[in-house]
Image (cartoon, rainbow, N blue to C red; front, top):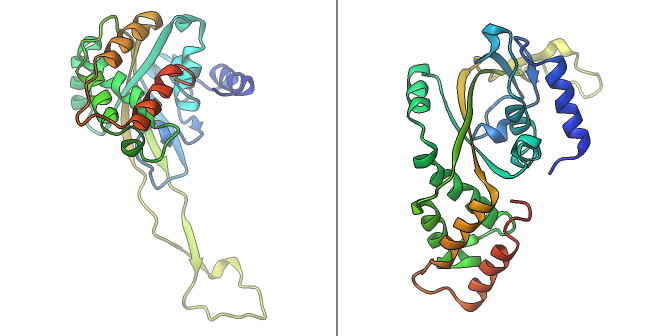
Length: 247
């Protein structure tokens, strides 16, 4: 959970910057998949930009902070929040994905991913820590018939990478240990063209009590094979006993 200062910073950004074309954001790499070779991202367009509208508060909090900050909003006080995202350069393909997204059918995948994240948050080798229970738990969560998930909102953003050039000493300039090599003896190397890509986001929520009761059913009906050792089962039980601390 981020500090109140972080929340105030995001709120200020919502007032002063939202909806501005070319708005520069801090690098949200962790929310967009694998690391890229860039230092910042630039918003080129978004769903509401043509109407001079803003990016939703939930999405700002998701990009800048974490899912718990979204859940801290009064709107989602009694609900857990999940965000599904899909990235690419083909608007038609992403549009088809968005159109076909179903809270009922896609929620098991979202639930399983977040449950897995909770289990691996404090261990290095989950397969060793939890044994067969770990894989069985994730599979059971993925296959469970979760109910009560609601598709609340969706949004898209067109991003552009901002490439910062790398510099190195000009190999044609001899080393001069007794003098300072001036800046003009450096050359730019290995630069990349700017990349534009779209990310589509879908906001899904579920009642907290309902989610917890269904998670208990999943947990209590797991039958891992081969049976985990006593220490592995104890490790899994420790996570489940405090599962929602930091969830």
